Length: 354
Image (cartoon, rainbow, N blue to C red):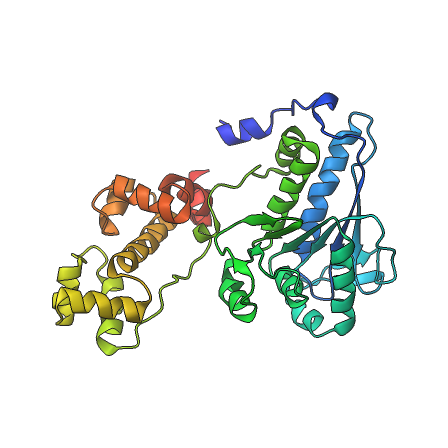
């Protein structure tokens, strides 16, 4: 029997010509890449805008977007994944009337950041464009030319701390899937560029067209939760003092034990007040927050790798109940345990269930 999700996806879209906002508006979109830019950073947004064009053609409308891949020179452009694309705009192309500029990330950004010609062109293109977006580590390029100064920005969770340290004048929001600050947009890693492009389509031509595009591409119109649900590294840093560091290792191995401040303080041989101050200073967060983060990590592993009921998982991870665990998931990750399991269940578990 087909799942409710697939039943919903297979419904024909109910879009009508009258639902498309500003159907006569035309906009140029340039996706800017460079050697060894990430393939999906480039192709993902391209696909979203192209899907919007495909759908409106059903109503006899002209394309809403003219889409080009821009690079230093036209012609072959090798992605970080090895697939070669074809750039149709270059640094000599006329920037007049540029609607949206999407700046991609990828390993090649390191070379692009050192290329004065690239940075000079990017400064001109950003000034000319009506709207500017970055995908993943494309934010580095915009930050390098000063375009993100004082602006709320996001990037891939893995690079968030590094980006903030390098460019302290930006207002980094590390958990956002995508963001908008004036004409500047930014998105998290890789596939989040499609979320951002879909939001742009919605702003340009209405939610009904965005929904039709999302259904066509099997995307969320608005992805639930933030980047925290995808991150596998805990933010808490290890303590530098021996007692605190040893205690952190013990907590990870005894996640279902009594991990209250009095119990942990007794184990560390400190008074509760002294322990709480020392732990917060060394670990970068309070004992309670650290313990909850460790328990969330344990629960996530159980959800990904087992079919155990939520009550059993909550107990194994040290939560007093499944409801307390659910609240922690929603507060920290923005999704429920069941929703997390649906998205991140192991491939082996999925195969067994099919």
